[in-house]
Length: 128
Image 1 (cartoon, one colour):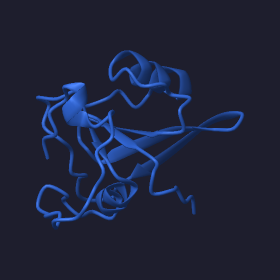
Image 2: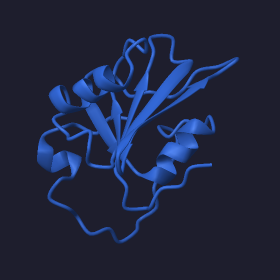
Image 3: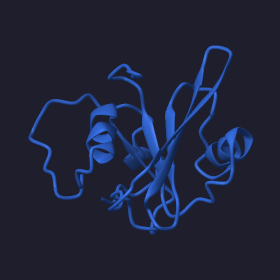
């Protein structure tokens, strides 16, 4: 099982992605469509049109990892197509992979120090 630090950023690429793409194709989407370096160590998450297959791309010292999951039944929650991407936490990604609709969850009031690269500051709408 892979584990990630709580500070790891997760970027969900909105809309459907052709999952026939592999390392370089998905890295190109991360770089060109959401303007993030695929070599940053962040997680980039892609889903197919039927939302029953998902791929996660990330860089670890020396090379890319590409992890895939296929659901036998059901679909993954995925953001509306009105945005190019949304940023979430590693914990939220775990919920999504476990089949929990993060749109229906509610974050409790909690102190969170804002970073300069937050989605609101980058001009991306956070839509669940």
